[in-house]
Length: 348
Image (tube, rainbow, N blue to C red; front, side, top):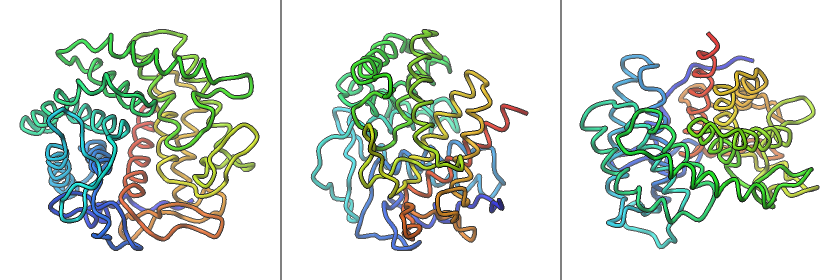
């Protein structure tokens, strides 16, 4: 199927001098919806993934955007190292409960920046944020936050970070493995009694733990759970069909719609990691299918990406795409493209 060239126009349009705005009405930014720190971390990740893999003008544009996003993280971080997540357009804080997911995403984005070392001052800012947040990682209670932390710690351990994170990786992975043992059954290879959002993060985190610890029990959990999720995430034609957010998934009951781009991206992320570690071609195939989902390889055969500006629809419903194009969708699309390119380059 025909795929347009990757464009960063919509990512730039959604970003002002504070950060990337959370939502759009069509492709127009909705300023009244404000900002989330989650989206800044994701957008920073996009810039880092594409650094060095695009043209000169796009490279300069992504460097400018990355500085905006990391400045937002620096501003959103509290004295205790955690992050406030939701801000109104006037930059005032909205009421909320601290989010493990947000903390984990920020740890991962900063670890990516530290490992990439785009510039001394940029790496210094990322490390400053990371070190301050590190103490809060002990207090995480939810598995998606653990998964991001495992990936962040694993990446830095692999990159020769000057703090040994092995014990943190072991402790966090054992907590995640404990959830798997508690909830899995012969017909339910999963960490929770329900499969909800950003599901592939959990096997992704376990794959990072295996890479560092070399424990085959962790690889077994990672691949068993990933294979189970892949089996649930394809239609009869073999196309990607992520778990729908209108009802989620429990044994014997699976929602078809509202399919979210971020779930497709996370599946590509975990499959790419599995391919990196095992070189099993079925995982490479899943990455390609996830990419295809954005270009019409989905239940309705409709493209989710707009060639003109690189914007992406927020979700896929029974009656067609959600025409709004917010931050989460565009970063999911751009990250899936980057993951695909990296996976193909592994094969070359």
